[in-house]
Image 1 (tube, rainbow, N blue to C red):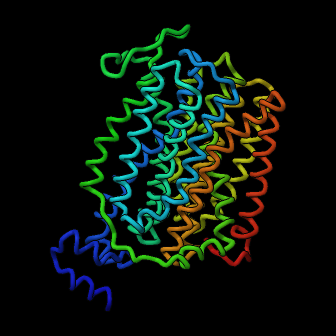
Image 2 (cartoon, helix red, strand yellow):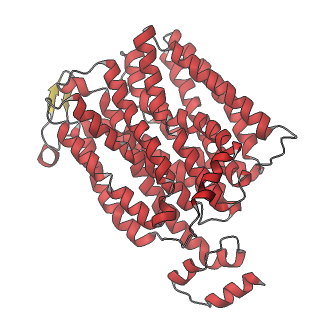
Image 3 (tube, rainbow, N blue to C red):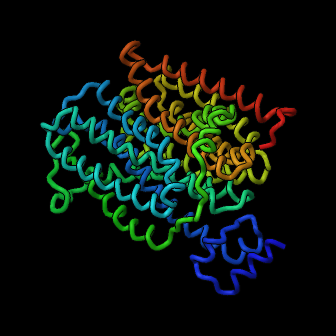
Amino acid sequence: MAENNIMQELGPNPSRKEILAHWQPENEAFWNKFGKKIANENLYTSTWALVLSFVVWTLWATIAAKLNLIGFNFTDDQLFTLAALPGLVGATGRLFYTYLPGLLGGKTSTLITTALLLLPIIGLGRALQDPTTSYDTFVLLVSFIGIAGANFSASMANIGFFFPKAHKGLALGINAGVGNLGVSLIYLTAPLLIGWNLSGLFGEGVATPNGMLYLQNVCYFWAIPIAITLGLIWKFMDNLPLSKQSPKSILSIFGNKHTWLMCWIYTCGFGSFIGFSAALGLLVSKEFPEISFSMAAFLGPFIGAGVRPIGGWLADKMDSGSTVTFWSLWVMLAASIVSLLGLQMHSFAIFFGAFLLLFLTTGFVNGASFRMIPYIFNNPFHSSLVTGFTAAIAAYGAFLIPKIFGWSYSNFQNVTPAFYILIAFMVTTIVITWWFYARKGSGIKC
C-alpha cells in the first residue's frame, strides 16, 4: 500500500528533483519506472570519474623507474618510498572521504574531489622538467597525488544508496572494477605519452640512452579529460537527500567485529591489487633488468580490475559472496607461491604468468567481498560506512607493499622475505573467511 501511495504521489511525469526526494530503490515499481535510469546515470558518471582518480593515483608508479634517467639521482629506497606515498595519503584520506556524500551530497563531493586532481598533476608536470627539483619537493607533490586514492571511498559510499540490495553487488562491482581500470589505463598510455614529442604543448624532453623522454606529458595530458569530466558530473549526477546520522551511530560500526574482519579480507584483495600495481614496475626493473616491461605493465591491473564486476555478479548469482571470496583466496595463495618461485628461478615467464593469475584473483575477491557487506550489515547507512571504511584500510596496501619490498631489498638484498610476509597474510585471510563466513554453521549468509 505504501509503495502505491508513493507512485500516486509522484504522478505520471514527476521532475527529477521530486523523484530524488522520494528515493526508494527497494520499491520495484518506483525502481523500474524512475529509479533505474537515474541510478545508472550516476553510476556511469561516477565510474568514469573514479577511472580518472585511479589514473592520477598510480600515475607516479609509471614515472618513478625512469626518474634517474632524466637527471635525478635518487636511491632505490627513495624511489620505493615515493612509490608508496600516494598509497599512504590515499588510504588515510579515505577514512574521511567516506563521510563526504552524507555531508555534501554525492554530486557535490564528486565534483570537488575530481577538481582537486588537477592541482598535483600540474605541479608534478612542472617539477619533472627541472632536474634540480629536490627530493623533499617530490615528497610533497607525490603525497598530494595521493588524494586521488581517497575518492574511491566517497564514490562507493555514494553509489550504494542508489541501488536496491539485489543489484548492489553488480553496481558496486562496476563502479569499483571499471574504476580500478584506471590503473591499467595509465600503465598502457604512459609509455606512449613519455615518448611522444608534444613539446609545443607540454614542454621539452630530455635526451637519454633510451631516446627522448617527456615524463611531464603523463601529467599534463590527463588534466584534459579531468576538466571535461567536471561538466559531466554537473550534468548527470545527483545529491540524494540522505538523512544525517549522529556521531554515535557513525562510531557504532567500529564496535562491530565484522567491520574489522571485512577490513582484513578486503585488504588482502584490494590491498594486494593496488600495492602490487604500485610496485610492479620497480620490482621487474630490479629482478629482470633485461626485460622491456613498460608496454606489458598494464596487463595485471587490467585483468584484476576487469574481472571485479564479474566477482560481484557471480556472488549475486551464487547468493554467496563468501564462497566466491574463499575459493578465490586459495587460488591467490597458490599464484603468490608460484610468483616467488619464478623470481627465485629467474624465470620471467613463470613469474609474470603467476602474477597475472594473482591479479585475476584479486578482482574476484574484491567484487565478491564487497557484496558480502550489505548482507552482514542490514542497516543501509552502516553498510555504506563499512564499505567506505574497509576501502580506506585496504588502500594502505598501496603504501605497505612497496615499503615491504624496499625494506626487503635494503636489509636482505632480495625480495623473498617480503613475499613470505605477504603469503602469511593470505593464509590468515583464508582462515578468517572460512571460519566467520564461508563454513556451514557460521551463522551469517553473505
